[in-house]
Length: 290
Image (cartoon, rainbow, N blue to C red; front, side, top):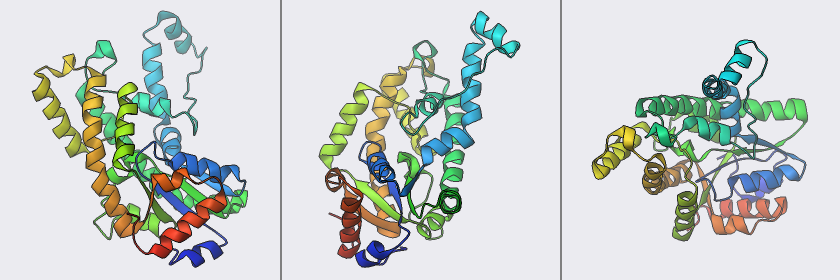
């Protein structure tokens, strides 16, 4: 790790951290809090994915839908309108909408083969966006004069790396430049994430082998062809499994590449000083938080 103890972290003139864990446990809250202080550069991996690497896919999907409407088709064909994604740090809906949901097209679903293609695009984009992090650290310093840097990673980071491989290229590049910090949720947090997801299912990225198994299990359980699958029902079915699938992968990332703080500890952070104190104390514990 780039900081050996709390004192070294506190004394560092350039503090660099990467936050990882399930969406909804405080990654973006912490990153936004640090950015608001005025001396931290906030790098959002999901934003980078949705702009640099998947922006064209997202815009093209909008255009395909627009071409189904005669008026919009005529305007597009004559270059009379411009269609683009308005993705922001706080609104990543264009990216999740493009990922989509497999199942019945009359209920907003896409064919499973198309869904898998978009998943593959996301995987490649996420790897590229993560590997861009060192470049943005340098860019933040050279252009904007920010020494402090926080990387707000996507919840699926654990799906595109191998935390047990000490030579994993993505984790090696990240850990050489930032302190990797896992925000670990409790059982109560996971239950709340499930309830929240059940109310508003949203597209997610799945590891290919895991996705194939979950899809096969769901089709077998429902006894329906893929064209009759309720897309939201499948997402709800997959999400609970996804939480269990990711937990050991996050833990291995923290054990082998970084440190662990709890979501309860994160909830108590109200300032950059609080954050620094938490990170320093965690480093001094010398092991992941229980």
